Length: 599
Image (cartoon, rainbow, N blue to C red; front, side):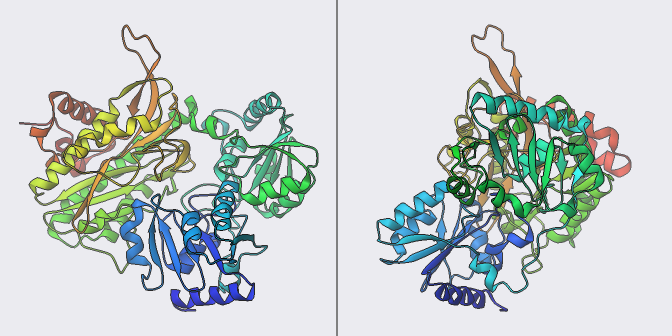
């Protein structure tokens, strides 16, 4: 099956053999992961779409692919519109589309290990209105027609030492146990991979860009736990680290173990545990408490050791990025630099730190019009040179054992236009407004999102992505539950109260299709904020990312004195943290890049 059209035809034939009139293909795995291992890349194999979020539906005579605003351009470049119709989320959804397009009496298949129970309920209701039914499959039909499907990773687990984790696994499980007792529960299912890695202070290499291992876990109300992971992934060091209170089982024994929980009260997260887990617990006769995974919130609130590690990682990463920006200033004006050569050079600077474990996501290296593709991923076919008088957007990050980084800078190659400088400065003003916000405890990210958009809105402009996502501690670069995003939009989590210790991104942007993209991204820490005379407890943000902001793109006439002071103070801190790590020509360039604004 050399083409995606052939693959679509093969899947339709397989569905006909199974007496199915359609099938839903989400981009996730059995753990509801955002980034998945190669074995779970069914959507990419079937359609060619390489973004990090999406779904598809295949019916006998039509097929649709669903993406949000980040991928509006990318999906049209990668997926053949003659075979697939493009659907925009949240304007529509898979369930809504099925309700409108499935024929009466149709049997639409889904893999219960790849969907939440909530999604199953929505799709079932939508189809019922048409006299159609949703049918759980025992084996995934995409796998049946994927001849060279990769095997799951065999990488071994590694220990995340307590001095970096800040708390032992036993302490974390004891806290969970107290919570389970308060809920009257016997155990909690952990199926999110980053929750398992955080709870047991282990990391893995089963998913590109996210240091987690394929596993399931049950944490019991006595502080013990059952961990389900392939035995050959366990070293003696990891076994010793886990200790006798963690009972070890093969990963493929998890479903059978759930079947033995008759009469038990089990916490399962409706957002993170797949429908198959709820179904197994129901069939076993367990009492289910549909509550949030007890690792989610404590994982999001970083402790002192995690914050110390993050700051060390940011300082190291900032120096690597500064070296790259200096290199770019020398090489790009003369021509010969491409999106691929630039991202490879940035990777090399990070590797030269000697501490890089992986990238935290595939680098977004977008020159000119490719920068307008929000989650652009360069290929040999799309690779563009960095041309004079254009913009270059680079969004990148590193996974270090002491922290996870994520930073975006937009750079002028040559002389930017007045419009580019206007748009960049409006994005910068929004970035500053969010960075300097002071807000009462209990404030949601959705309440702050407007701050970053206001100056774009004033000019009739906007951007089709959230303004901020949570970030893990040597874990997922996109971590919940917190987000800064419009409530009810494509980015769930904008309604989560922000709490001191949470790390988020601050990344407003602007994208002009076919011409250029702009984004300025730093990571920020939610921290207590003291205000004289305040009658409520207040919070604010500490900026954690340190890299120069391109002065050539700032229209000083659009900045207020306070905004100019913020830029100068930020650059002074960048100079103090990154400057001592640089030498030679890079240090000379850097001193000019972070000098106070003039004029």
